[in-house]
Image 1: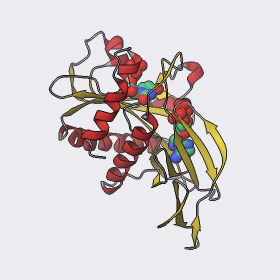
Image 2: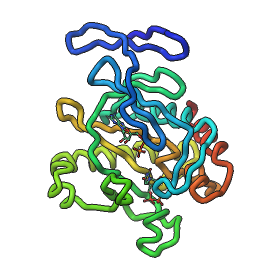
Image 3: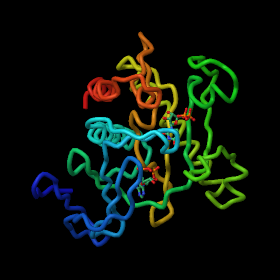
Image 4: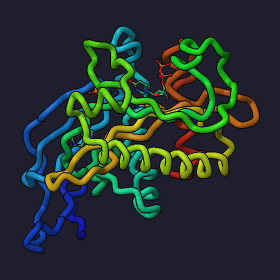
Length: 258
Ligand code: ADP
Ligand code: UDP
């Protein structure tokens, strides 16, 4: 792929199916979510995600902004997805074109939030009546049906197959990739003095039906605790009114050497 430059955004030239290089042009907005906007491009297989500084919690009840969060999340997610690709996990990442914008493969999102946990925290702590910080014997995978109006309820493999959200084979692939991502991130983060408590992933299907990792991996979607002090370096600082959220996001950015 070669990169041309227009203004602040790099315009990637990507080979299409016929092997012809074409410039990727941002067109209409397809969707605006709580943390990102999604734009169509002149290539039907590609979209551009644009990361905002908006922060929400408790299903949109708490709203605010975290200065430059969009930049940290865009660059951190891209950094991690590039490493995951090298490690054999297919992702939607194509090309970062500005501090906040990235070209990604367009997918049909599997309507699940896949949560992987190593240490008890958040909703699991409440559900099982055990304090935050207890290390689990083995990683847990949970699935939540991605529906804001319903509050993303937890579901299991039977719901997912019976309601046609994904086939059994797709769920097996999603679980395999999710555990691989966990192993990869645990190691990466340990090296920079961070414990990976839990995180959320989203997967999607490309036009040919392949399951790939989509959405983002960032302090918005993970719990990161400093290995020595236990300090929270993630969105819990915002959720729990702890203050210092901007500094926490920047600290993660710095530690990963991005
Ligand atoms: P939400 O929809 O929960 O408010 P965001 O603000 O992060 O979340 O919006 C981004 C949306 O884009 C999400 O709904 C996410 O599922 C979707 N998405 C992420 N990656 C892709 C992709 N590669 N192709 C299409 N949609 C994607
Ligand atoms: N998570 C997320 N989006 C959601 C729900 C959860 O990114 O809509 C992440 C969250 O940041 C944490 C993990 O998934 O890293 C587990 O969250 P939990 O179920 O404990 O929910 P919470 O306590 O955040 O309500």
